[in-house]
Image (cartoon, rainbow, N blue to C red; front, side, top):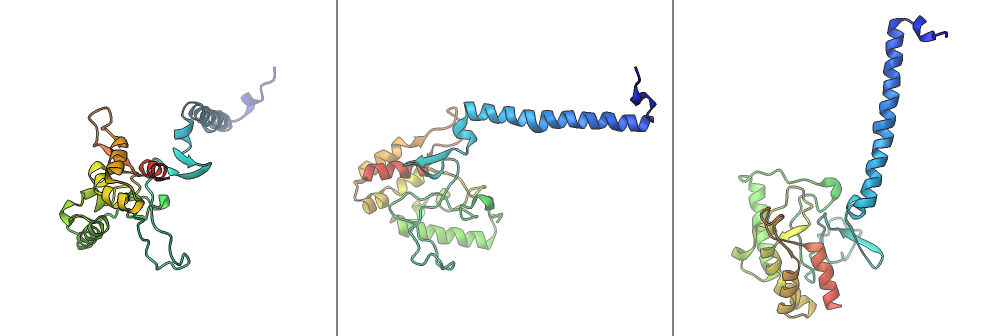
Length: 213
């Protein structure tokens, strides 16, 4: 049988072998493997594979993995200089260096000796204390500092309980009702020893809406 490849120069044969290997690996790693992984993820971990999106009444209201703001509507939505005001009827998340924008995820990169960071913490301490009606010394650390991602969906139990009285007053609920709701949404340490107890703000606010009707 005539073998054309045997008459080709060695350099050409090597290039043809490399091209065949490239095509085979492209099909395996660029087509078959992604399809297999996507299929398994959609079948076994559909919720997680699609971003852990939380829906309510058929509409997406956020992701349980991403922090978001709970602000009052702006009086003039077209005015970019109008500052957002937190809604007292909702539990508030940690501060975000990227304004809760997933495309701007990241920290402020300010060191502990930065005057800008010190001023930001002092300003936040005063604002949170006034907003929640507590002493500045009682404001938890996670109410003052942004997370490394700027998109932390959780807050500490201390920050959640600190907001109970303000949320209860704004909703016309008793502090006991809201305190119990927070306690029901506390997630313990992972595997019993990793991390700290925490509260998912989106889940808590959804339950709060259901409680207050």
